[in-house]
Length: 342
Ligand code: PHE
Image (cartoon, rainbow, N blue to C red; front, top):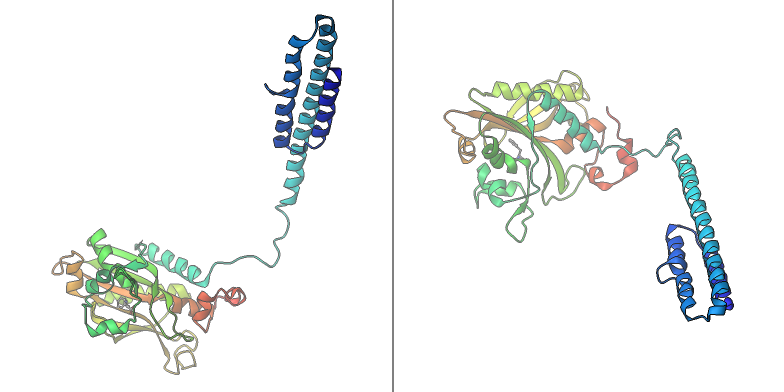
């Protein structure tokens, strides 16, 4: 019997040496001191022992129990102390005063440009909406006056999905939903990612960003359109920007324009960026077509409005001096990080 107790004690000593954390501690504790643990099993044996041996055996078991309990208590205290020490030394590793070094992340040029534009438009009272990237054919085309089989569909080589939806080819795809959501009057901008099946080159990507805007009210005219475009461009380039309108065709605006800005690189003298013309084509726009307003649930005899579709990727390239649009989606960190505000 006594030998039994010795075996238990030796086993305990072996096991307790291997304890490194709370989990292994609990396993040992249960194995020896649990309800069905070895110490309790040894206690239960008292019943089977002859009365003459009972007293000494009882004393021996209790001695074993106390020494195991004391040892467990000490190990538990050690573990707790260790945990606190680890917390303290761990905190030293995260030294908030350590310089971060060269490798600091940065926002993407598109994100920076979009944030700036959102800020500018919010200050001019525009609300900012999100657009879907997957759109119904109706929203992308029909609702902006591009019916099925209309040649204008060819202007945008489209990715069709198997369920007849499309990857939106332009932010104008959100016009209808936004008009129905807000009604008139409204002042909203909606930046978004667009997709077209383009031949890729320095100026064309299959995935690019636009920022579209709508302003609808009772007396909106082309003068309002010019004012907002000029103000926005002057704020983004931080200097007074001259703009001009040329006729441009988009089925959902009438009249439709291409808005050019005086070349910011040569001030209109002619350079390689503006191809010696002195002007940079920047923003298609126009007065919203009556039937587009009607399809959006807006009474076109009462309300008028303008729409513009700013090439966000294009603008980011201009402000960050990036000469190949493919860089923007490339993950070429070195190039994107080098992008400097002009
Ligand atoms: N959605 C047109 C395009 O992507 C741009 C545009 C927007 C033109 C709003 C006029 C008004 O080509």
